[in-house]
Amino acid sequence: MNEEIIYRQLNEREIEPSLFRDFERRQVVNLCWRRMNGRWVIQKDPFVDQWSAEDYEILIQCLRRTVKFGGVVYAAFKEGACKGFASAERERIGESAEYVDLTSLHVSEEMRGQGIGRNLFFQVADWASAQGAEKLYISSHSAIETQAFYRSIGCVDAVYLHPEHVRQEPYDCQLEYVLRRG
Image (cartoon, rainbow, N blue to C red; front, side):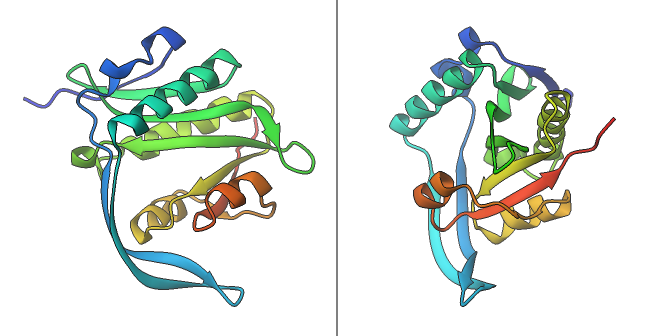
């Protein structure tokens, strides 16, 4: 029996280690986009991206801080287990403060390809639009699968490059998504 996916906004108290008990953040990466001589090229860069217990602790603190300071965290649940989540900050970035920062979007490994990431993305996009933002800013993993996902929903190379994101994750692709108005 397939139970449907339930999406909802989380409060700070719900963001605790047990939330991620059945969540598997694992991605086998073989090919990545890299910027070479001003152009994007695909290069072999095999590795497995898998979160440790320490990574989850850091995540929990970051998500709690997001909610505490007026940002948003949405989660997707199947049979009561968190299978995806997305977050965005309240504080604006960009030269004209036109961006809301999409700080996380992850789907448990066994649930990818079922539309969960897309639904979470658009929930955050609707929230950001309601906050008056013009665009979402995404500092995204450079794996070809991740980039294909973001491009398929309308993300493009960011016009503005957030210096802190570029410094912290030099191999990430900096993207943006123009929000629908009205």
